Length: 400
Length: 105
Image 1: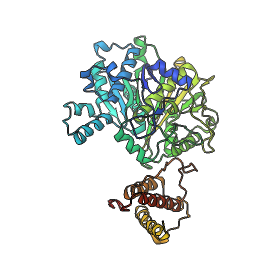
Image 2: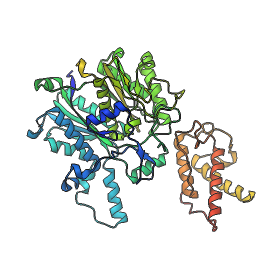
Image 3: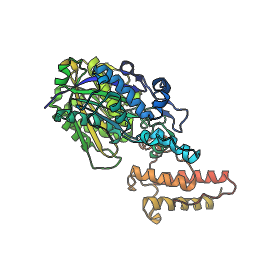
Image 4: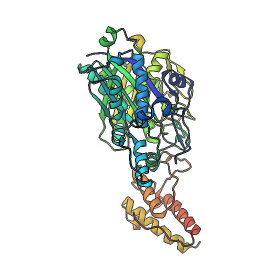
């Protein structure tokens, strides 16, 4: 089976735009969650210092929903870091697979407002701006990717699925390079009213696994990784930032909203098997950890079922406590956090942790990043509405 | 506010709850826990939505706080009391005392 390495990384998030700022945020326990002024919900994890007109021209913006903007910016950073010859076009042996949960929902919201409330005409670019594949299409255009390009939608596991699908395309030999990741820009009124009605949003902040947690906090952002077969990366002398060891994707066919410990545990076990990862080398788990009552308790149980005694001590943290729940971007942002944790030998903290919950009894790295003495391999969990579970395993570049 | 008015509102709310959660209002036992009443979190969220629409009130319920947070609901009886209080308060505020159209009842 072909081995897969990470050669480029990019991110836009509430705790940092660009990988260096994001890493600094993870190490410092920066909480990107704050009050929202223009929306009916109380808090969210906005990319606060983002100004679209500083990144794109007016004519570009006419075609780019905010989710596509984030996707493009993170992809630019990742492709630049990879050193791949993007100016010449990456050609047919490269793919683009991006995850997205809600689609171009800010453009949808604006369009309904303009048409129904304002009685105005819609822009002729509304359709290409709204189409769900837009983030993948614009990345393929930007870097001359002529292999497969598409988006994957599996709610909060979308970008973990996108990374998994990219791995399979490289393993099968269909491509040598896969630009993978996810994006989301969901903090718009029409969408948050729906989340509000589901009654799962926290009014204060996101406290994963903690007693007194009051739900999830929506966030926005994107992350992109450049994956390559190890031969392809070595042949061009590329720097390597980690190895993608394994992936598992399943559906628990249990309930449209309620998580299943069995489905999650199966995904974790399948991933370890796919990665051929000896559990003794597991140094860190980046949890799905949404901060809802149901997820955190179920995930704790699933980790216990799948990891056995290792669950007693392995550091498990939820970086959603910092960058919020970015839905379709979550898996990619968290895989990036996990790769950075392995590279810099630290476990990012679970912030806003107030007190242990008797139903959640693992080592959650509360409130402060911790050094990882043993730092070899790690897992990232993504579990979604619809019962879609994805788990990815990766190894530190030092051991590639 | 008199007891007869309260009883009338209570019957009205109970009827809505019974129709969403599919139970017979005659066999209603307010002190049973939500789980004992067979109400799952999605059923509860759905009934809160219907009640809010029907009676034009706002119920401060968060699905994450069933373990005893300030907004927690332990039983259908508690929900009934809370809704009746809100509806009575709301009708006292609007002298016409009319309820909105029962679009979802």
